[in-house]
Amino acid sequence: MATRQHSILTIDGVAALLDALRRRGYRVIGPTVRDQAIVYDDITSLADLPRGWTDEQGAGRYRLARRDDDAVFGFAVGPHSWKKFLHSPAQRLWRTERSADGVRIIAEPVSAKPLAFVGVRSCELHAIAIQDRVLLEGAYPDQHYRARREAAFLVAVNCTEPGGTCFCASMNTGPKALGGYDLALTEIAAEGERRFAVDVGSAAGSGLLAELPHRAATPGETAAAEAAIAGATGRMGRAMPDADEVPALLRRNLDHPRWEEVADRCLTCGNCTMVCPTCFCTTVEDVASLDGSASEHVQHWDSCFTMDFSYLHGGSVRASPRSRYRQWMTHKLSTWWDQFGTSGCVGCGRCISWCPVGIDITEEVAAIRGSDSAARGREG
Image 1 (tube, helix red, strand yellow):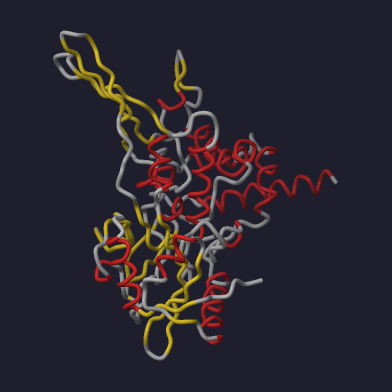
Image 2 (cartoon, one colour):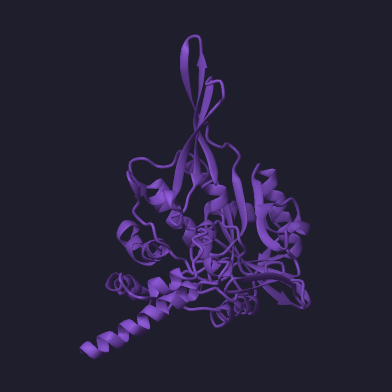
């Protein structure tokens, strides 16, 4: 059953929301236009949001375009994910200092500035939940991730404008946010103005909404919000059919010729892992001063597409592009279930848009599925 939209904010109410978050001491981060893309960065006012902009996406293609209206969130997702702020691309873990008394090890303090994310899509909420499982559960949680995550305030935006590479509906991760947020907005146009239907997802969200100029949603506004989300479901640019069957499909086809075919195109550049909101692999480097008096122990994002990532004594165990692409895709869609109880893919489509040669993960699955079905049909 659809969740009833409880309240309505006007565009001025959204401006008040941003102001209220800043008053509470949050570093407010949201979508903004920069470098010919819609990226996530610090925002200080409503003027920073990409009002009137959209993005056109396809395999290996992304470009900004002007809308014919003034929608604030009338776009899909760009090259950034919220992972950039929660699971930092470069994180110093500790450092050392040498003195006459010996060597002192100094742990890196955790970040104290709380973060507020504005414009989090449903697929991204699922991605954050996946990263929570990876980085917070178990005996050794990532302390830096935990400090940022526990202090974060999430303003979700239900998707009403899917991109050409989106397939969240087929992954059951969108376009409507069902949980994991403090407030969720659905943008609608009514009587010549932008309005935002609001769902409350937490006590913190309820407290913040109480400070904003809002009113109860009418039945017509609630229906318009639900219709906008339903319309997005029907306009997805891609689909992952029978997503729950993909893990077994890939396990049956580890030697499928399609892996070699995709390897002929793959540059092993790692773009797909860098833009993916769930990839979590890292490496650690020690950087010493020239005089040996100090050093830093720094964690960096890494990618299973790099040769060094799979290096063991004597060489890389995944020396070919074929083996590295297969590792990425089978982990993402299959063995992730064994580790974390969910798929590692949320259907955001970033890996398709930002692949320099336009490799499409849904197309690769479909190709393997087609020959697998034919082969199993012959066996039957």
